[in-house]
Length: 490
Image (cartoon, rainbow, N blue to C red; front, side):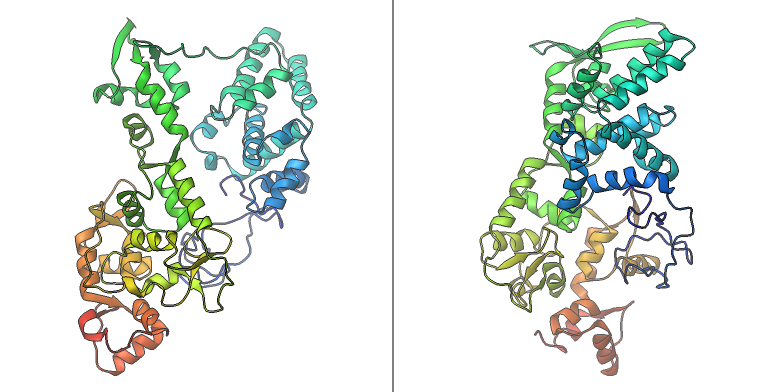
């Protein structure tokens, strides 16, 4: 959505903050798409300027390339010239952005290299419009643009050098899209590539720039890589304050190869809609594999999984789903899992049971826990709190993991921290809570949501009934040993 700041249907400017309470509209615990999940008030239509109508046609084509609907992606691809229809929708979108930026005034080049979302919405729309227009007229549009630049330039030699840099950025700016180089080479046959890394052999080396082309980000973290002695290196030359190093080729090439078969663990969490501790269980159960590369860990600073093992996991998940008619009472496994409490949920055991067809399930348009449906009661074998503890590797848990384990919403975890029931640790990205504190709280207290799932009723009914029986809540939770049998399992 960072590249779509305007709605492609209504053309209104999208907003991500509630105008009433300034709360970010993440819709994590949605009260309906029209309501703020914090203050629960209706979010009014955006009052910000809409997308100019003259940009709408190309903007909508670009939005179609990013659509989750196959027919919309296919429609946008079909609007492209035959040569570009060989590319995937994602490749076309990326090429459009590159052309839009580098065939513009060039002011946002560095912004794009860091993060596309930093472009102002109006500039993003103009960039998309310019890029799509160039692709729709491929190859004549971009060649005409280059000729026009030369015709209007006061210094032809300087303009040619500038054009060469821009075209090379489009052709070689994204190492993962080799067809971009072929496309630009067809239009500009005299295009010269940047100095390519030398062929690898035993004892061969790369300069920092060469290594950076294989592993983007290497140059920015080269000093730390040298300090930690992750890659063997030697001093090549020094002139004043400029120092040039040569780095051993094999570990850099290995990192480049692993990078192509890597996926952020956070992306897997989002796709499966599972907490981090569940993915850690998958690693322990060998359902997934970590991508352990010291160079990538320094550059990306985020944990990775081997993408091919995740793709295989998703294929197995699709292949093992039940072929019989889905029963009317089937519900998302994420909802049914709220019946499990008192400890971290044994997600790896649950998915092993799914993949071996011990538990029937159905997929409805995706592989996340809100799209994977199971029959009522199918997870009850995992409810027993006296079974073995579930191991999790992380010492601390982020808010979302803590909420999932306690069967509460994230706001309840924040309230428990504010009440000093749970400690909090300021991590590099967000607040975390010691795992031991969360597990101890879960073992002793139960949420109304968990009780409601166990009794097939509502949280409001649970709270009302427990209060009427004289039980006292503890910051919105109930003593597990006292109330668990009041509402029997259904």
